[in-house]
Length: 155
Image 1: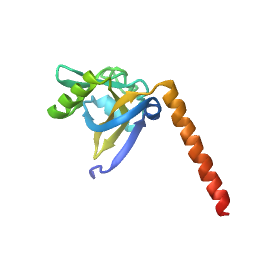
Image 2 (image 1 turned 60 degrees about the horizontal axis):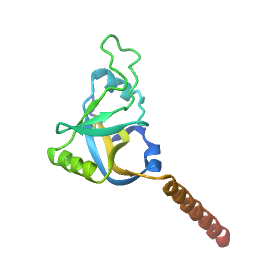
Image 3 (image 1 turned 135 degrees about the vertical axis):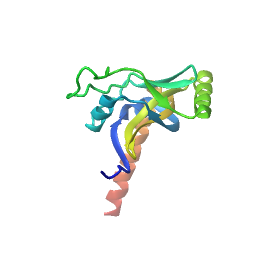
């Protein structure tokens, strides 16, 4: 059987870019059970309420929903269980320092397979306030309006 290559996106957290300012992005491996992998290969997962924490020198992915595998038996997994993240010790120490001192949080942006291995893209992010969100929406609308006007002028 040929080895899987490339990147296959399973789930994305579009809401994260709306609710947070993304400061830095990390890629981490995820420790999964067999039925979780099968459920992910079927393209089923939700990152909406997910976040990552660092406990006892280990990174954990919390509140990510991977539904039970439909053909699974008694070996099926819990949909919202904590999953260990695979990061280098230096990365974990850096993330721990950043999240403790400056009010940053770890938010999953996407879940994907890369060369057959499950990976999660974690963002070191700062929460947006309501006025920040309004400002970003207003800037996007203004840019869209300028682009329309430029296209009309070119015709």
